[in-house]
Image (cartoon, rainbow, N blue to C red; front, side, top):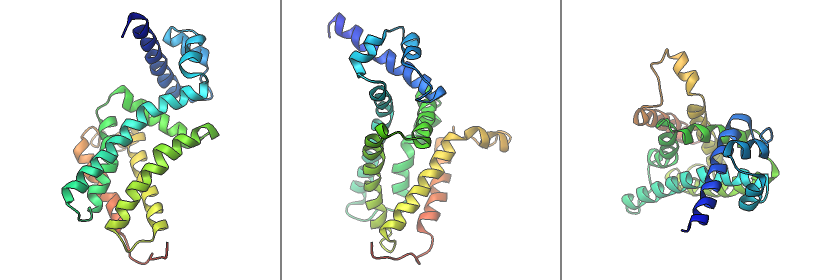
Length: 221
């Protein structure tokens, strides 16, 4: 990579880093391109060159975190399925594949983890139309892979019921990682998600109980 290419790459990374930080703090709509370029010590032309539009910049920031996270989830699910050698996975192993990457990202205390939680909250709170392809690609399509694994593990549950229960399980995870301060304050500091393995086991146990509860919801779908 020549000097010009290195500088261009460095500028692009600086814009992404600053946009991520400002989007997480202020939201997508409230953050201007001028604020981002000022923070990144770049000019508007650089944003236009690398991303074309603000919407495209938002998508680039989100994909930078979400894509590798979901790749880790799917890789873990595939690994566990290979180890199961054809047998259906337990609900607990499926949930571990779903939850571990996010908990490790946030539990390490890295800036990227803190920003990820806030960005995800902004996406879910007010998903604009330009975010729909990202939600379809990084949430809906990936969720179908876990939906299929749960259906194999719990064949008595109707397809729609599995969608509901996975949706609730995602809610448990998001609340756990997004509201750690509430947990710490209410427990006087005794409960923290920095102990990743302990937190993972608690979240898995709670969600597995919900996923496996009752057999009265059989259906045709």
